[in-house]
Length: 308
Ligand SMILES: [Fe+2]
Image (cartoon, rainbow, N blue to C red):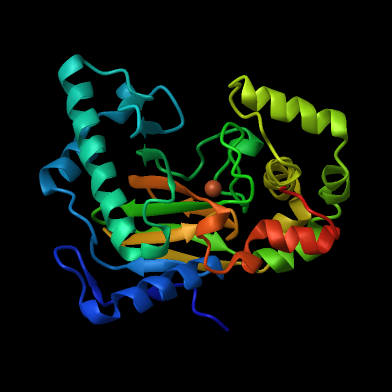
């Protein structure tokens, strides 16, 4: 059986790959590991995040500042959301996010060279609340196993890459994961409506295409994108699956960083507080193992294209 994660020991925050002659091969092997459903773990911070910024994030009275489920930052627009604090606090938070995001983008460009310059930089977020007993509605709950899909950002078969850091200096962040995507898809995709999405009508396809051309958020979804949104909800709502499925417990230690393609690795957050995260969308052209991507797995099951 595979280990729940691969600990990367030959990459340093200051200097990158320990053996630069092997950087091309190591970079490619990290992409292969991620695309085949592994999690890459860095026990120590692999990018710069000043201690005073870490402490500032931990020291805020988040119950007063909070507005949303998480605080989020959009690097390409330099927009911070989910905070209602005084102007100096908001500006400091924005600066911390801006620097954090730039550091992670630089790190990912070096670590995962085959993706460099090809990814869409998505949002970053900070999760300052204890994950246990948050009282969220079913489809927003993080403690139920699911694969990620974003209603407003269809990927057209591309992958969702997320870089998480557990900023909590004392407590681990605890996840559950389960069987690989292919196993879940073979067992549940038909029940989750794969056939219906695969046989999407010409009218529905045209509406999506025109919506995208006119700039409506979340339009331009392929049948794959629509299935994945449904699959996210299907898995969370399937009480038998949640209860009976195999569970692998992962404890990410304080200050560990981990990378995972969350559209392919089912995950649930069981406990933890103070996680930082930056998301990237990896287009299909950049994938090193495209046959292992969820859209290809689903196309094989459906027997027809879901993306083009
Ligand atoms: Fe998720």
